[in-house]
Length: 349
Ligand code: NCD
Ligand code: ZN
Image (cartoon, rainbow, N blue to C red):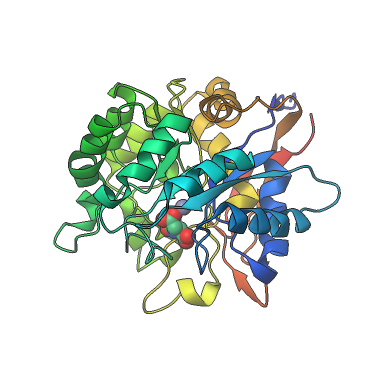
């Protein structure tokens, strides 16, 4: 039998990742840096990264955790609050290393308590982002408890996103980790400069995964997995070749004990095996030829950064996802722990 030929592609980037801070950086950063040349680093630390000065210091701590043999550039973001000033946006743009500002509706997800309570309070700041071209990265869910958790993304589009984009039509927007057909269609059809990131787990699983034979906390993330027709719409968007859709893992490390808990944290850890997971999805949909655009080109183009030039390989070879990985003085459980993968990422061409 002939060996299946490996897939070679331009080195990819991750346009949405959580690296956390402190002692866990040395455990988490090498996973992302092994696969991706660059990553948009989320600012939802405690306290959140709200100034360019804080982003500069956080960037240094991340760089100190990159193994000597690896090349990795963290692309920093600021956390938008009700009080983020227009001047802070100008400082962020001038820094050269801040590439977006993240909107978390207050209370929407992990460490979002300091988020925006009312978008109207941010209009002057958002105007400066529109003028300077700095993208707004949106966690697109309303937070009202009266609205069903499975509807919060679709309601966000109607109540917040459309009015916002009407007021600021030239604001550059990334609709982060989309999970619904509604969001995929909105981004596909909307006017203006808008794109969306899609995670591996939302391409692989529907909401049944959270309840397969019992409650499965490692499949709980936000926005929560949705019904199968939504997953199918995300797959269609990802493999469409439309440059508005690109890779963002939303890999989010949490200690095992806080996931397997009476009130478990939201987040799936995929940094270790992200490209293998995406390759499985694209292969299952006969679209491996579309993976490079999604993983390596469209994000860079949207963020107005040069495409990477080095090459990586995905080899057809089986390996088992570890049951646990070190996370500081504890451990985390990666997505699909214990399962066999069909592809292996090799960081050179
Ligand atoms: C993220 C985290 O843990 O920081 N969790 C998640 O479920 N995705 C926050 C986020 O991106 O919503
Ligand atoms: Zn996230």
